[in-house]
Length: 263
Ligand SMILES: NC(=O)c1ccc[n+]([C@@H]2O[C@H](COP(=O)([O-])OP(=O)(O)OC[C@H]3O[C@@H](n4cnc5c(N)ncnc54)[C@H](OP(=O)(O)O)[C@@H]3O)[C@@H](O)[C@H]2O)c1
Image (cartoon, rainbow, N blue to C red; front, side, top):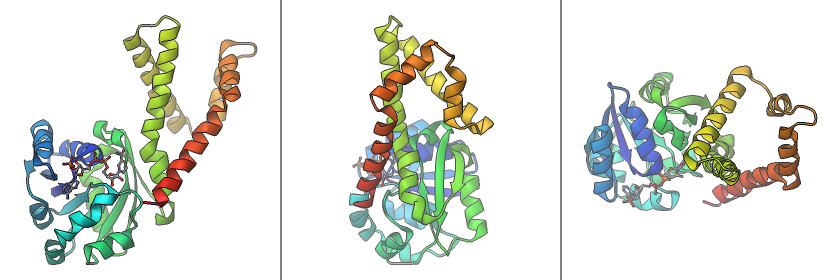
């Protein structure tokens, strides 16, 4: 299958990297500054091309430009898009843009799969939430899932939940990275070497997330399981509560969601 990527930045590049693991995929990489696409091609394989070529030759066309760049980019490829017929499918990762808006801006009713991915797809541990336009058949959906099967976990959602899902899954790695940095700083403050503190923090988060996914435990119960009466952990929990840690994280999600709605 031929996968075209228009926009090989952080997210487009991470998805292309995940797709490159599947030997049945051929990658076409297009970017405003082609040297960025070239650098990616040298790392993961695939060939660099123009936006038009990606539209004309791809079976799945991934749109990976920023929302504010979308209109200008689409205006240059509208004619080529009108020439493509299903099962050609557009895969949009553009935050805050609905399927209907994408089809209107493309000037055609090409099948669209709207995805809300996150950067851990680059290491096969992403979460890709997705929703399909009515033109997407079951076969097209399966083709997309197979092509991207090395990206991580997939969850089909209703489009009305796309924006909030993109914040929890897509912005989440930034929030998680801040927690990892702070945890490591704490370790360093108490004498751990930086590299050890980061390794321990990262593996701890990986393991905790895996435990939650595999045991289906509530995070509150997982916290209780570590807090022994009169012990150390509960003192840390008390300190986080004093500094409104959970309220700050919840507010961060709401702030990012409100910003997404204004794109
Ligand atoms: N980053 C995330 O974690 C994340 C998560 C979920 C969804 N998304 C969505 O993914 C999209 C990309 O985000 P990003 O973080 O990857 O941004 P990014 O790193 O800035 O990547 C955007 C890329 O688009 C390229 N571009 C801009 N205009 C173009 C054009 N006309 N033709 C071809 N390429 C063009 C840019 O090229 P130049 O470098 O040459 O300017 C850049 O490489 C956004 O819509 C965002 O909402 C991102």
